[in-house]
Every structure is written in C-alpha cells, then in structure tokens.
Length: 202
Image 1 (cartoon, rainbow, N blue to C red):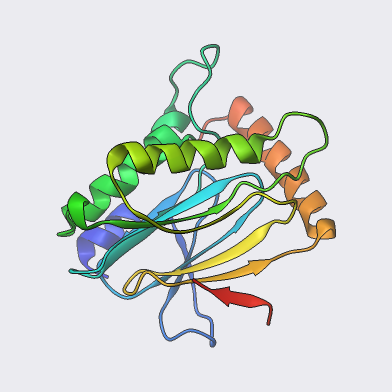
Image 2 (spheres, one colour; image 1 turned 135 degrees about the vertical axis):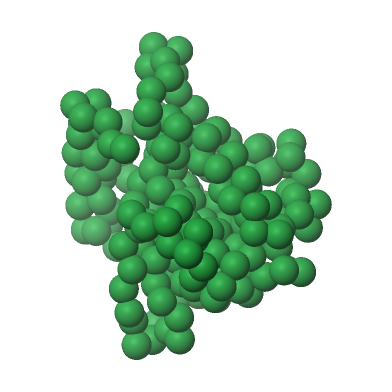
C-alpha cells in the first residue's frame, strides 16, 4: 500500500491468511478500509451492515461496517458519528476515499451484507439497517450487484478490493448470541468513552 494509504488506515489491523494471496485488513464496527492495491477486507456482521463498493475500471475498492443508519435526535452529533458508527457517515467516508484513489461515482458497483435479526423482541435493527443501506444506494444511483441481508444468522465477509468479489460464510445461532452480546458491549463502550465450505462467492 502507498505511504498515504498506510497513514490513513494505520489503525486497521492487518493479518496474513494462507488461504488468500493478499494481506487481510480486519475491520470492526465503525471502521472502513479502501485500497487501490489488491487486499482482502474481512469482518463479522450481526445486525450491522457492510457495504462493499468497487470501481471496476481502476480496480479500487473498499468496505465499511456500521452499526446504525443515522444518529437519533437524542444522540446528537459526536466523534463516533464522524468515525463511521453510523451509515450516513460511513458511506460518505467510503465513497470519498474511493474517489481520492481515482474512482468515479458513476462507475461504482455495490454489494450489501449483514442486517441479521440476532436480538429477541419486535424491533428488528438489522432489517432497518439493511433497508437504509439499500435506499441510500438507490438514491445515490449506485447499482446494487448483490445483497445478502436479513435472516437470523451472522455472517463472515471477505471482500477482494481489486475484483469486487466477496466470500460469504453464514454462522450458526450459537455464534449469533455471542455477536449480539459483543454488539451490546460495544455500544456501551461507545457511550462511556468515544474512540478516536459453506462459503459462497458473490
């Protein structure tokens, strides 16, 4: 990755995985990653959403991971909204970073994943997140190439920035409970201290 790319995404954890020919960037809720060089972006989704955007002409791609569509009226504006906790900001940052690397908005193609119903109760946060993401892309005129959202299963997502391909693995309900607990803990952490195979090819 270029020096500027390393500076901008220096906080993102990188790992090597023998299954893949490229370095893997691991993103957490509130994070995103973009590269003009071949990379794999990896995350695990519960009720959260990841939008993958790709410009096939210059082979620049990126993926985000957001928890909620937008801040509620009571939450107001905070540092976490700027960092990608909310889809409304996560999408803006993702698009801008792709454009900075030579991408064009008119060439972007999108894939959307996540939005599982992993919480008990009548409110389906995942469905709301998924609906928001699909509506955003429609309003922005970005064609949707693939969506795999909803259901009650979490998902592992591996996104290839150069080709726009995605490897998806659905996880079982035992994992769903663990991810739900982690999302609740993560939300609590944000409120306390804001921060600065059965694999399917899509």
